[in-house]
Image (cartoon, rainbow, N blue to C red; front, side, top):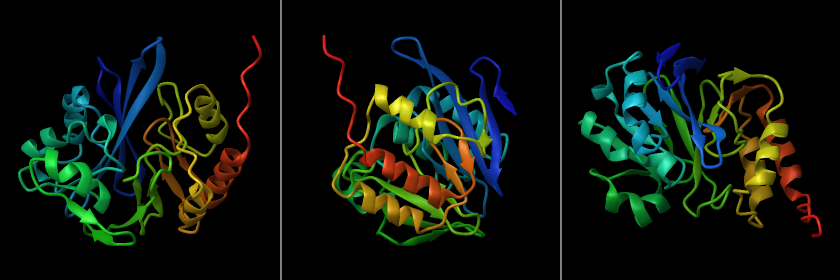
Length: 249
């Protein structure tokens, strides 16, 4: 469903009660890119990622197609960065009962200082229930970047809200795919490597793989359905390969 014809913002259900809100954008250099937010329609609705502040009206409009914006209870995100939580206070103003949700490190170093209300800071492995859905917080420091990084695994639908993992360029026109996203995401990374390449990257990705996700809800590009454990392990193998050296002048 197109929710805004001018921007191309669109809304699609990628798992039971979990909606991907996608807005195509252009980034410096004329490159096509996209931002995704994920809305969970439940007894206590949750939004994962806010998008940057300039996208707030578009995201709010799309949410309104599913449920009243004011009923949001949780505004969650992987780590502290503008496209993850730039609109946080806008959503907190629009939803008076909502609270930020993040990892304990993010709450300590940033969120409790800048957010209009205190964060619900989740410990590693802690489960947040929103009704029928249950979200397990998984600390993932420096994967792909940011000390405070973490992800949320929805235990009923086996949907991993995986932030910047498997970022794909382009408009993100396909909401949910079973095709290859590792190739496109690695091609994007070669041009703009956003990974910290921590010594623990492989261990962290293996931990995520052990959660056996069946849907990977990517922040940029198509969401993906299939054997998520195998895809995350393939990503770990690709990241472990030495980077290609630039061609000699």
